Structure formats: C-alpha cells, structure tokens
Length: 152
Image (cartoon, rainbow, N blue to C red; front, side, top):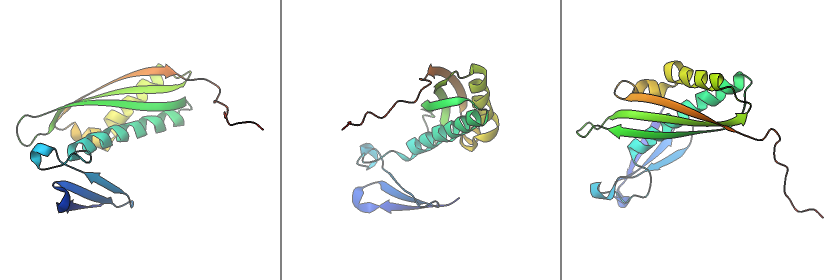
C-alpha cells in the first residue's frame, strides 16, 4: 500500500493525498493552525478510515454467515491526549446494523472478530487507545422497495 501526499501551499495548510489505488483525498487544518477548514483534518480521516475498516469486516463476516444485512452504520467517538503527540486515547464504535431477521449473536461475533482479529486499524490504534464497541439492530423490510418511476 502506498500514498503520496502533497502540500497545497496556496490553500494554507491543505494537503492532497494520491492513493496507490488511484484515488484522491484532500485534508485541511483548522483555522487556528493556518488551515481554512476546506476538508477533513488528517486525524479525522484516520478515525473515518478506522470506522470504515471495521464496518467492512462486519458486513463481510455477516454476509459470509448468510445474514440478510441491508445496512451498517458506525458512529465513532474519540478522545485524544491533551499533549503532543495527541494520540487517540479512547475510541468508541457504535454499530447500527440493519437487516432482516439478523441474529444478535452473529452481529456481536462479527464485531468481535473485526475488533480482535481482522481490522488492522482498530488493532493498531488499540496500542494507544481504549477501544469499546456496542451495537443495535434495526429491522429492515423483507421485501426490497419497488421502483416508484412514473407509469405511462
């Protein structure tokens, strides 16, 4: 995995990242640090990537377990150290998993497997942060919604 980061001097403290997979990501600093608040902070992208990494695992594990998963949201809350380096010290991951007849035990197991075995991001950040998880299950309709296009 690789990434190239370029400072965008004309925009204060903004940076452009070109990922090895061919995507662009822009990050910016807070105004009190010379940024213009035009994009997420670098540490916000770390947090967002962590939430997406564990959500990816949970969805994949539930699909492989033949669970009828229709949605997965992760609400991430964090605390950082007050002094440099301002590492994450606490990260809370709350999963809202939507599906039809989802097994709570399967959801709990998928989250645990992600947290303990598969999610590189949470395992890495767990070296400095206390990571907690919780979840809720929301029911989805067993029938996919029909198209509401106009009829002629």
